[in-house]
Image (cartoon, rainbow, N blue to C red; front, side, top):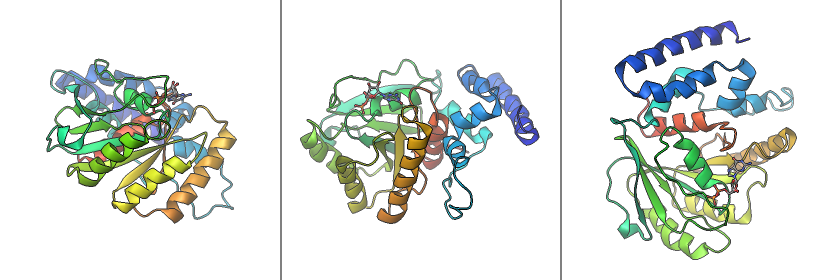
Length: 284
Ligand code: GDP
């Protein structure tokens, strides 16, 4: 059963979602989140606030100074962000174009966020999950590593652009250097870079190259841990703590909070959408 505070908040939220329904078509798309809100509290926490769920497994006395959560939005804010990511006639979410070189990239003034990661880390699957309320958007998901050779630009209404960058590692190192480096270094409207790391594997040598690049260009970036449904809870916790330590001690530009996500269970996806809506100035 939901705690009294949470239940009260949820009642308010249902009212808000209903009001959204009276105002715009976005409500029908937000219904999925209304369903999420009806989940039992433990399931809701696991899905929407995965770090909070993991924190419960830490021994409090041994880690008194470890604050895993910095960005901790309310369910109302998360619902608001859902409507940003819900396609409607008024809020068109669509593939814009692809580019193999920065000078072929569309000239846009909207804020932009990009996703980088080694091949097979789960980048296409994550972007697809972010666009689950825009089913007409086609994001290619391949079983073969290294398929994404282009930068793919997706427009999210009037709000911002999402860029899917070529995967690095394996067979695509040249693409990475030629395209990704130039893009990261020169794209003026780039607000945040999301660097994907496989939660079952941890930070690899190839991931480190991307970290070094973000650090060298003094970019604000965020580490997203993919496929959190795969490792056991114990292994996941170990990885989260190790990667958190890495972020705290070895990086300057990395956001201090990790974002664990699963494109299979959708764990952490709502929170990530809310973070993106927030940093692109679209949460108010
Ligand atoms: P990309 O090369 O980084 O775009 O990776 P893909 O999105 O194509 O995913 C690579 C492989 O990992 C595919 O077989 C996906 O089905 C699998 N995968 C992606 N995300 C997840 C996830 O969240 N959980 C699990 N269990 N598998 C995933």
